[in-house]
Length: 130
Image (cartoon, rainbow, N blue to C red; front, side, top):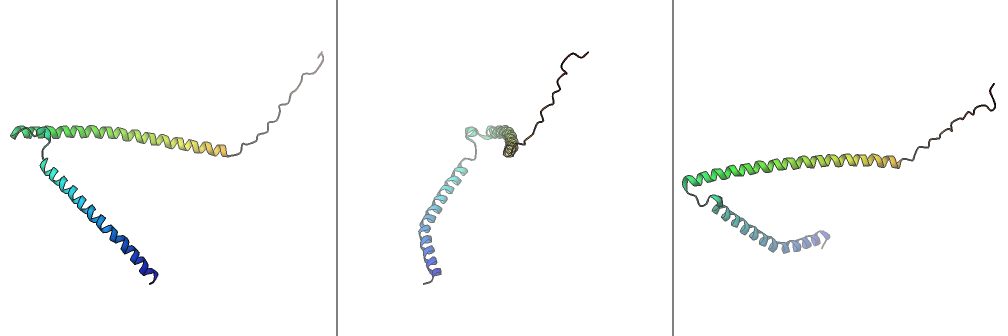
């Protein structure tokens, strides 16, 4: 047998062991999805409105929807504020990183040697200047 046939046999043996796992996984997904569908069809109304009938039920649903809209708007406002804070902190981190990089570049450069010429001192003449 050549090398190609050996690889084919090895890969087919590996894939044979995967079929039972795949089948079990598919059955598990199906069970979970069917449970979610049954739960969704049973809960068409929020529990807060389940004890009301007719017009009262409709008004409860409308109030519930309005309450949900208010909560969503409040959460969106909080999320926007948090996003602005995150952006501010990212800008601050970027500025600090830039400053740190500048400082590291300055520290990596050898110090410039500056020779200072000593000042010339002129002494007053000695004696009496008459």
